[in-house]
Image (cartoon, rainbow, N blue to C red; front, side, top):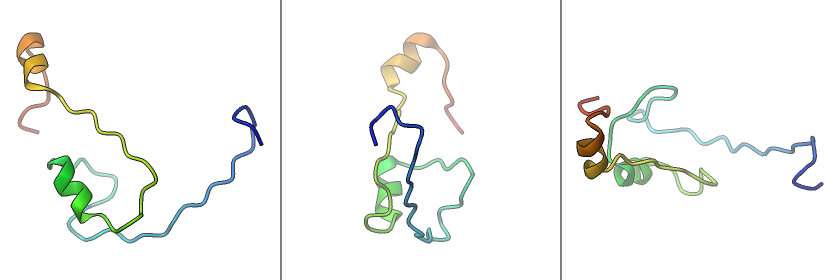
Length: 66
């Protein structure tokens, strides 16, 4: 299989999340706090897109208070 293949073999681990982390909902918390609540080796990769204070001040928008 190459990166251009139409075939995908996915192995999805069955890792129950703690009750403090609801699924399919927006969760407002610090990224390190979130990661500390996850079971060991449950996610292969994670992407965080922080909104930096300087960008919010300059552009005058954001999702503050969410």
